[in-house]
Length: 330
Length: 295
Image (cartoon, rainbow over all chains, first blue to last red):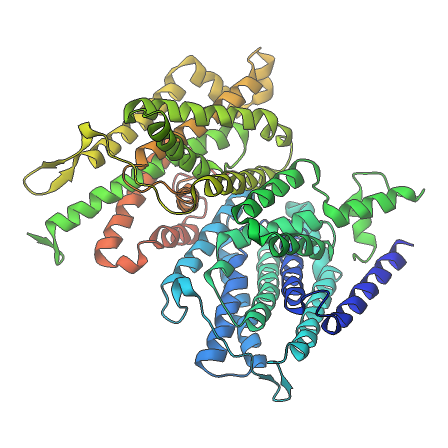
């Protein structure tokens, strides 16, 4: 029952998205593209937070680096979008492996502080680099023509291209979580010494998880860069790192696609209440506090929990992880 | 006279500036270390409380025309009381959980506090006058030393020593150390550990606010003045470890000086040098300079 419900939800979302470019007077397609980018960003982030139990406080570095790399490749080098995106993804995956390799030398709270500090290092590097335009950001990045066939200057074309890329990214996240590799990550999350004693090279797994999460975050950043034709310091700022954590927490970190719900909610808050200025920051802070105090399951986690409770055969609370190991996660 | 091609005055000036920054790092990392030791919570809001201290002093000066010296006492108390309230109402509820939730909860608080001050005062900086007694400079012959900077360094050292004495030599300090090691047993001896947690958080937060008031005449007072600082302090904490008070104070001052020297020789890297040092330490000595590994 639950599986059917989730499948139909996904089908409904895809159908709704396909319709968006035809109804620009109801919902702004550019905004929907932005939401899709953040949805992938949050789900990619959750590979570390929810599925490996690693709290990175520096994911803006990966998101923003990909945006800058893509922008540089397309504006300064005049490369086509497919190369720009590939460069952005590879760039942030390599950065993810490097930052991950340093950060996993410590654990828990220290790891969070290390990623935050290293992301700040990346921030200052971009602030001072010449091609980034510092506070002005990298503007007027051309969208180009994908594979020499699809003209991305049309919002209509761009929408479906972005949707395809995001869909592929989401599918990859799903595949990673529900693979033997994903099982090992969960084993590390639940009991690291035991996973080590079973012969898994924990460090390699963690670094690979970092690289995958960073690369997929980078895909989101590259696409965002092409949509807005802009790579800016806000993309690498620690506020962004905090925001992706909030999206993930709010959406539900025990699920695969839950963080996307968080991304929709947080983006909508920014989009529709932008005029309120700093009040939005206050509200986001309050939501953060609320989530940590009483809503740690997140929207999707809570829904899942409620649906599970209705079934008589539901496993007792506290055995969540055993259950997760048995079913494909959605 | 020149040192490696840099005039002595500029060289020493940057070292003093580095020590001033190091002094702020020291007072902040001290508070972080005490709070983390007892509460197992990394207080992301430490920078926000630093900023709040500066703003409260600024408001006291403007609305009540309270002078610098009373503000230096009143502002930390006001902010400390807010910290006590926050601990009682919110922080207390997550003690049993993974420490990461503490980081996230206090991060939310940062957004609320910063957003609040931004709504009330805008994003730009407000000038804060140096107290008349501490204006002017001392001419030491080989360099010109602004009095206020010397004052800040001196006060920070006194504060660090006093905190160390309180923790190592007094009865309250003994309770604190006992509760840090084994809260359950300390409680069994009839010591009110929850109260101790509240007071510790209040004191740590008050220290941050105190540093904020100290910083106000040097920097301008603006809502994001604390958050960039706290990230540097986090890096310092990673380098020095949260275990030792003296360790974190020494690391802070040392890194302040390194930052100052970087400004002299390669100013582009002065904002990033602390993070680079952190990366280097992680490569060479993963547990940190004074590290007992804690998770």
